[in-house]
Amino acid sequence: MTIVSKTLVSSVFKAFEGEAAAVAKARATQDKAIQAVLDAMLIACDKPKELFMKGNAKTNEARAEVKAIFDGLVEKKYISKSSGVSYACAFWIAFEQGIPFQRDLNNKSDDTPKAKAEPKAGKVTSTSRTDLDKTLSKALAQARMLGLTDFAADLLDHCIESLDGFKETVLDK
Image (cartoon, rainbow, N blue to C red; front, side):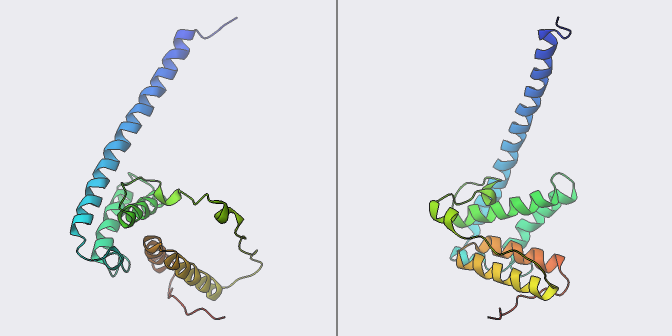
């Protein structure tokens, strides 16, 4: 016995297909608009990219402009705060690498066997705010060593905004 007809089930699926298509179209339009900003930033880049990107949103006008765009989208509740940070990071990855904007660029991992074979960080059993600042400073240094300057700048912005008195420390050995 069938209670719900195939026609009704089909209409439910069709309604969801419509939403999925509308979301995909909206995202394509959004990404195209972000790409236009990225293109303008590339045109404005009048020095080596690492110098153009140096610093963070408090010390670099270009970074501040990009941050303001994504912060504005968050403020209007068009995207979540984490999406704003993620999109800004993806923006700078695309800028640095000279590739088209993709909103998930910062989520793409290095799947090489070497990356998978690297040992994981040790277990945290106790900590302090000083230890946290040292760990974050070390992460900033590691990101810069790996050439992830945009990620480092975004992380530094987040640390400064979220942690009272955060300053990069000279790591003790």
